[in-house]
Each structure stands twice: as structure tokens, then as C-alpha cells.
Image: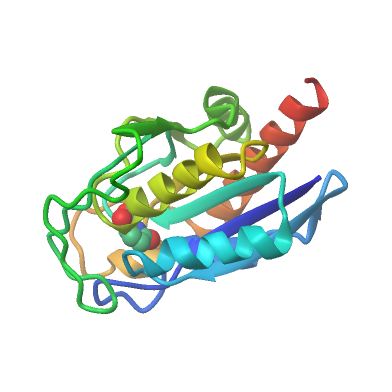
Length: 205
Ligand code: PCA
């Protein structure tokens, strides 16, 4: 079994993105499952193209994309991605799509096919706050999650995939009053717990 896990490049004036900082620190193997890590540009379209290329090259069984959700206090496991791009701020190449469909031939929405409740439970068992989120937004994270699930639906039917949002790191909120953050150590541990929950689910299948 092989898992591909991706994080995003920093965006919106931040110098780090906690998603890739954490992904980098995940071990290369968890419970005998190989873990392949990659960074994805915070850019509409290009993010999906790069993910598709990685899936073609690496042939993973599981794909987990991770992104920063500034302002959220918990690790959130996303349930659903919607077929719309609606950006308030430009991506890293200056694109600001408004009310644009992602794939004309895609469903309005796709659900994660990862064991999202079991992932939340496993993370909470590690004493780290986590919950299900019912919206990944309408920016690049929802875009990539939608792209992943569209690709799974259209051409990688055996892959299990989904998305995890993580809070800011403490160093990112020094000048943001009353904005929550989570330590890098906890974020890394939460991602490892999520992967363990997914592995358990498949071993039990
Ligand atoms: N978070 C953004 C895009 C990249 C990232 O890490 C989002 O939530 O859409």
C-alpha cells in the first residue's frame, strides 16, 4: 500500500504554509505503508495538473491533500468538495476566478471516500482537537479536493482520497489578535493519526 500526501505552498502573504511544513515531517513509512510527500502550488488548475501527474507517476492507493485553514482552531477533515471556484483573493499566479465551474462534466459535488469519522476519532484519541468540516471553501483547497475526487471518479476508481485542513502555526498569529493556532508537532501527529485510521480501515476491509 502506498499513500501520497500533499501540502500547499505559502500564499496570501504568509511565509510558511503549515500544511507542507507538517507533511515534510511525516515519516517515510507508517505501519509498513510507504508515504510519498509532495508540495503543490497554490494556483488554480496547475494544482490539479500537478496532482494528476503525481498520481500517474506514483500510483498511490490513498491520496490525502492537506491545506491551511487560517482561523480554524481544530484539524478539520473535509467531507465534500463542490464544483465551483470563487476566490476573494488572487492565487499565487494572480488568478481570481469568480463563480466558475471547475469541470463542466463533473458532478456538482463529490464526497471524500476516506473514513472521515474514524480519522476524527483517531486524532481525538491522540488528544488533539479535530472535527468534520462540511465545506472546504471555494478557493484553491476546495479546487484541489474537487479535482482529486473528479479524477478518482473519472479515471482512478480504486484510489481513496480526501482533504484535511489544518490551523495556522503559532508563529503565523503573532500579529493576528485572537486567532487560533496549533503547534507543528500536533499537526504532524494528527496527520500521522489520520493515516493510521485509513490503514486500519483497509486492513479490516
Ligand atoms: N489553503 C487555501 C489554499 C491553499 C491552502 O493551504 C484554501 O483553504 O483554499
